[in-house]
Image (cartoon, rainbow, N blue to C red; front, side, top):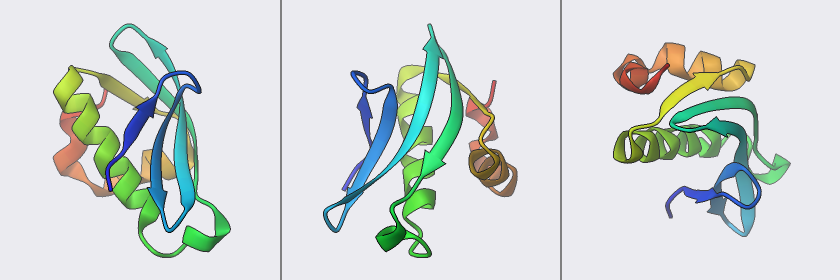
Length: 89
């Protein structure tokens, strides 16, 4: 399963086991602000949100995006994953 950029809803999405975890975003050109990450209750504690963040980083690298995480989860995830710092902006 891979993360998709649902541009019509301004969010990145990852579907697992029929549920969708997502990260809302505000985009201005190549700059993306992530103010909210949410995982359904059924997916919590299973690493889904982490896989969502990994997929977001892959998309950012492929498209040359710079990410500013304002959501506490996303901010902490980036802090714990220094290998993803190259997409922070």
